[in-house]
Length: 198
Length: 309
Image 1 (cartoon, each protein chain N blue to C red):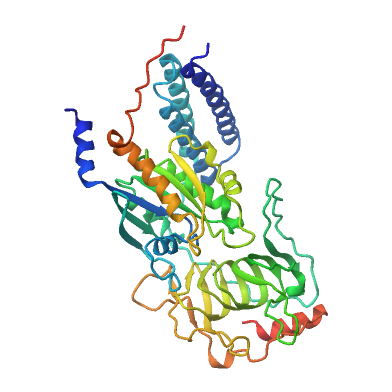
Image 2: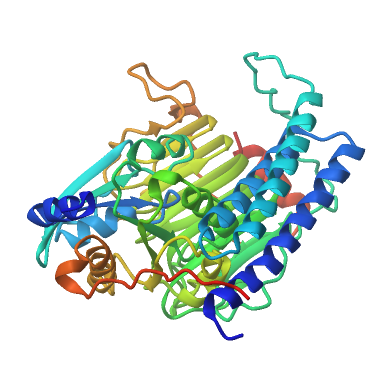
């Protein structure tokens, strides 16, 4: 029994995932979480510090960390990187003026060693508002197609109507599960074969 | 040769070489001129990215190539180190913010340089914007009518009065429904806004009055602003100074939240009260608002001069 097998078996018992919600302020991170959890979203105030939510999703227990996105809080994001299985990056689709800022913060995060391997779900939030950028526009604005180091997917969603929130979460949970618990969900990935170049 | 690893290494080598040469030329030009710390940081960041792409490709490249690339990156790293050594060390010191000039708006119109926003060519969705005006009275007539809940961007205004309140006397009110507001770079401007469902995000306001009702309120890097606010959550400010808050005027909407809110200052997370905001003192409360359209620039300037803090 190799070390990897032991680790996998161990995780299988827990079936837990740690998911980190990040994004600029006003993106709607806390509102998405409250909506997912069936809570009232009217009184949500800008987050000072962080919120933790734990809930069951399919066979898994999700530990979701939602960290405030104000500029003064962003240096503290790094304190939450450890053991992260998935990163959910939430975008305010109406915030055209800060798309560049949003792109830079995201790409800086992806260089982080402790987030290496984490699945990346991008939520293009606030689609209920007319004038929001579409998921395709946001994909290009954030230059998502240049990301080779992480599995990623973008979903347009609305925290107010609840559109696509569960669908997005389904994808990220399945993606993490396929990686951590792949012995139970998929056939083992074929190891790359060394190639001799003539 | 149709081997996937081979074609990957081909494509990778081309990309990598292009990025490396580009970075090298930037380092060279940085050597020729004097660099700033920011410029140097940008270079190191790009180098880090390139190093990471190389690390990610490990195993898919011929080992000789991999070794060569690593050496090239090491060389770049050394050049950057040399540059960094040349940089004058900045002494650590507490900085005092420069006092804000308190000159009133000149009564005569001057052409204001408005930062150009590059046109988004590949964009298909369009949003409502109110942007780049000086010394004007702007109302809902300045906006295209929208039947759905919309996101409105207000930016780059100087010496303006913006009135987007629903017209009480209008028998057929315009069907404009704003749900979210993004506001940036306003000077000497008065904003009369309705109570909206969504959030308001503000950046870079100087000497303004803002009347708005919303679900969430975030204000950044602003100074000397009076806010007449109706809100069910906690409004926040960050990197702001001389901000004053009070209740939304009852004359514009009956549907307002009670005037009990605590403002949270993210630049002052302590038990002591924040020095950056206060309540609008009674004697400074505005009772008469310019809700009717004003056409002359002088009258707009006069109205603003009597109202603004």
